[in-house]
Length: 108
Figure 1 (cartoon, rainbow, N blue to C red):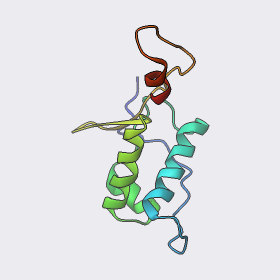
Figure 2: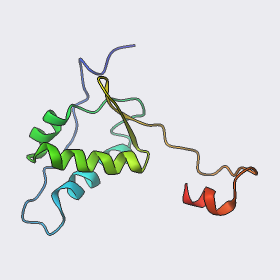
Figure 3: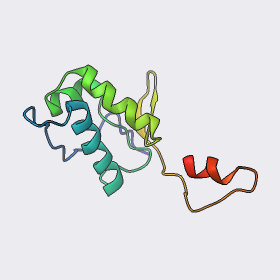
């Protein structure tokens, strides 16, 4: 298995538009979400470091951190200190479990 840290995928990133009324962090989040959902980024792929994403998008690191934290909340990526940021395998949302309430399953 080759390490994605030494050879990160080339991402078709769309730079943010500073004139847009959409906040910069949200533009980054939308673009990364689209890359994940389209399959351009596969589960277990490693995202480039924050500094590289910051350079590619033309925004500050805090903007990148905010976008990434929102993707973590939505369980699309996971961050591991010292290892990087990884794309997660999407959960199978079509399965229902009898040990959880319907409301809880819908929320998840």
